[in-house]
Picture 1 (cartoon, rainbow, N blue to C red):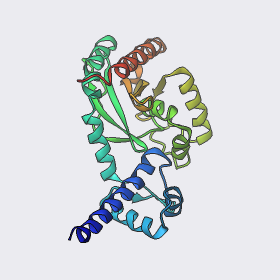
Picture 2: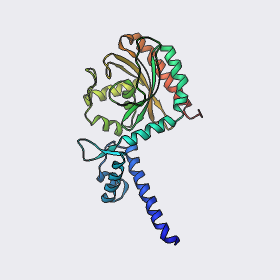
Picture 3: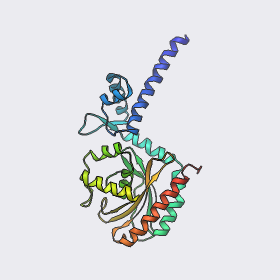
Length: 260
């Protein structure tokens, strides 16, 4: 009896392990993968991979990637990522720093997290000004437009960054950079300076300055930003905010591993 019940249990464990391995390939590598590439990477047959992909897609953990023969992370996987990020103590660690940054700048401050090949706002502290910018917590946004996303993109591993740049880049405003070559140059400058500045890239009348947020593993996991009406983001204000957001992101990153 023991042998009869052990086989199905072991088979189920193996299937679950393979499905987890497939998902982890998307988390740590290219954002679009086909059955052939997954089969070669994991050393399992394409028939088995197809079955896993279909099962994961039926639960919206994966979805077909438009314009390719492959798959990408689906909305259910992104939702899990958001939940995981919210569970990190980073939000509790970041709260007093974001509040102080809001008081120092007089503008709205925000924490963004990397989820798949997009970002989401995890928290914000609103400006006291009557005319101010606010962000939508939990909303999925592209990485190429706006300083909070662009500074994350600049510090991603090259393979992941190039996967984002290989896709069509939507023009959210007339100032959004959509040419991959031009964006690479902009990202190189962002990486060298350790901060990104946006004036009307994602929203026409918005300005923002952002710095990357690195996790305990040394990888970029999000960003810290200051945002407000574009007319208040003068050259003098932007220069001041550069230092403030870098210092805030560094402080949050250093304290991330401590219990909240």
